[in-house]
Image 1 (spheres, rainbow, N blue to C red):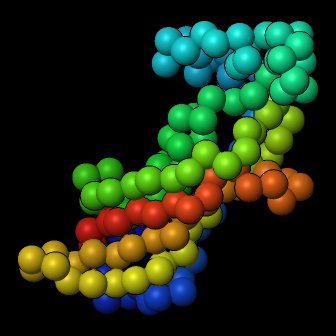
Image 2: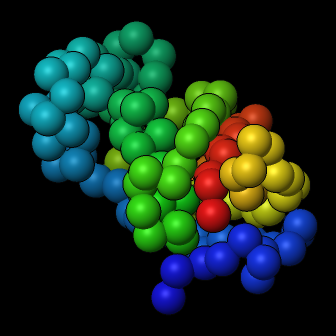
Length: 138
């Protein structure tokens, strides 16, 4: 059932999304995005440059955050603005949880807008995405 502007309250949380990352996901994202940087695909290289192994593409985390928002609003066309800060890298073996919370509601130019604070963290509480904000029209 689609969420409505009148039913949303400041402070409400949207359903979170969690996923356990594995190296195959990083290889597949490299193929889909064309980003074959060895920090995402070569564990030994990632260790050599001080990353402790491979790290996930930042944009894959951003994409999963967007999925979390769109799953809630049920229409990608309703997502009007979206930004995040890449805080820490996600790694194979991490379980990353993407979350959102209603920060504000407003009407502008006849449009009913909901502002979300959004972010992601891993199983240890390390912040993956921070200072995120999304604006959706409901």
